[in-house]
Amino acid sequence: MLRIGVLGAARIAPSALLRPARASAEVEVAAVAARDPARARAYAAKHGIPQAYGDYESMLADPSIDAVYNPLPNGLHGRWTLAALKAGKHVLCEKPFTANASEARKVAAAARESGLVVMEAFHYRYHPLFRRAVAVVRSGELGEVRRIETAMCFPLPRFSDIRYNYDLAGGALMDAGCYAVHMARSLGGSEPSVVSASAKLQGPAVDRAMSAELRFDEGYTAGVQCSMWSSTVLRISARVIGESGEMRVFNPLAPQFTHRLTVRVRDHKRVEHFDRRASYDFQLDAFAAAVLRGEPVLTTLDDSIANMTVIDGIYRAAGLPLREPTP
Image (cartoon, rainbow, N blue to C red):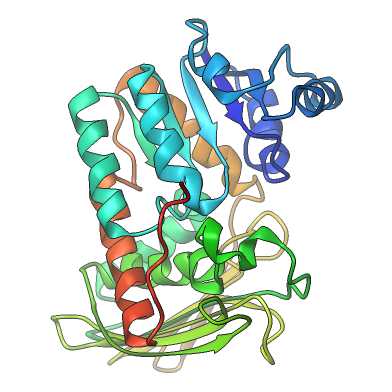
């Protein structure tokens, strides 16, 4: 049994961890920690978590906790993943992995030295829907790849939200675009360079929307679009265009609700549907298998560094400062 503690009374934890853990025979959510003891106790009572801690350090010092789930604000991901590693805990870290690529390399080095599992929580990547999408591209069915287009756009007009806070490493590219970048890289199969980028701003350094052009060494290109507030209100999709046909993936991030994969090659079209089990369930299965049995993960440390490297490149191309860790 893998006993996990939650860093912070986060809104994402019920869907990302608590519900999947209830359905797992291998995982128990054993504790939650928050900076406000009363909030930690209330969160634990509401969600049936046995132990509540009034600070993060106390939970990390608990020898009965094997691993932590880190859904803290972006700028705190690296700091508390490092603290968890120092305490001997495995880590399931929410995306984006860190504030920037330099910090990602630092965390990855510490993880490798520790021998512990550190896995970035790109949950969609573990669902059969996107595994199949990658397999279709790799199979050569579409012919030589020409173009990849990915998008993660949703409305968040509450501009006081921490996701718009530069001091917490916020911005549309960090919160939404990390998915679009990751999808493009996963489908592309190699590491792209950033050709250009354009941002729409909510504040002097905070993007509410971002679009970027990428180029892979193999010659094909990718268009990445993301937003938390723009004229594109809602768009979550991926598309690969090849010399022989194209593939479209509708709603790869929440396949338990509405999902499909469509492949069109010349005059033939097929639509594939997949397991409605939540992508977070598959992600937790993978994390538990990595910790308990040493099985490999899809979102590796090298993958996390590469994703943050592209994100940094997009910010530079858009003329914006890189995000920095929160002190």
